[in-house]
Length: 532
Image (cartoon, rainbow, N blue to C red; front, side):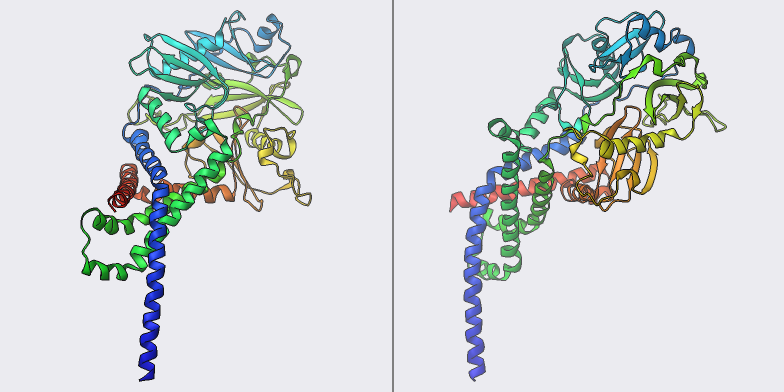
């Protein structure tokens, strides 16, 4: 008898505790929901727009890449040495060959970083050559020879319209007199399209930057305050989702009892019914968003990671138009220095090794395939080919960007010399080295922009991997374990990578539905508060 009384007391005691916890938890859930209603609306609305604008309504352009053409040896009537001497240039950073408007030019990078253009047939300098080349590239990418250029400017840093995700700097920004007020960004040093923004995309970029990245805080404060604010609010949203799961999940029996006595109708009924399902998506978005925000503390400096030594004409005694190479496949060239020797880095079209020739690039079967090239290094003094030098040069650049580079502001981001006991980067074992011609993995995806690159995976505690673009002597990306964890967190929990098996359309549709239900539940909760 006494046991039954004790059991009843403990049961009553337990129910009171549970009831008290439930009451407080519900109050906190409601308070948190009210605090975060505006941020949730901002994030979900702008998040809803992203898959629509980035995929479903993505603007198209005539050409996304400049097709590599074979340069006839007869087009190089004068060597680079002759052209530089005729223009009284003794020192320079580098050169390459560009062809536009039926003329071939040497594009020479000066010590100050400006690009000059000299006709390869008579050494005459093209006035405003870089601006003219930028306009020619823009018209080629757009396939528009009629619209007038409203404005042409050089962009040297990332802006609210030209985000760091575009990677290339410096670039030309050209605005055209067209109904869509097209803005196109091109990198003249490589002849690449950086990005293009018609009016609809310009508006979307502003909206997304303002309401998803909260750039308006930068305008009134600074980047650190913006990140701290975002992480704080995302953490509160996470707690709101957790409290919702506890209330409507673990304590659902308590609600079922009250619902049987006083059945809930309208908004209150639907808020509870779909809230438990949405809480999981809210948690994934909030956690991955906050985790991603923590990577934004440091300014983006990868665009500054370039190796640009100064060359003198006497360092390249062998004329570039008399090199011993297969001129029938010749596409372009530049120069590099390695181990106190200077080499011509020559790009050749890939050899036809099969019985049938490859289809032309305008064929529907080969439209999206990148052209493959063969890279050949020729000693600028002996005119002899140096085999397998592309990988060796990539290794040197990886060393330069860590142990070998002066630790200026651009190179502090990957300083590996913090620990004195750590072996020199030069002596760390190389686990993998290969040339990537496609964005074939999540580790080095389309967002990194630059191709082809050399992948160098090192045996460090963080499994540091470098991606080097040898054609421009640039560091395209550096990835370690912490980057991989954050990257997969954002891809899986924020961009729904786990839905890739169903295709991009279904994956994006799932993201839209998830964001939409979060928005609906939040608004329903707010309406409930106003009614009460």
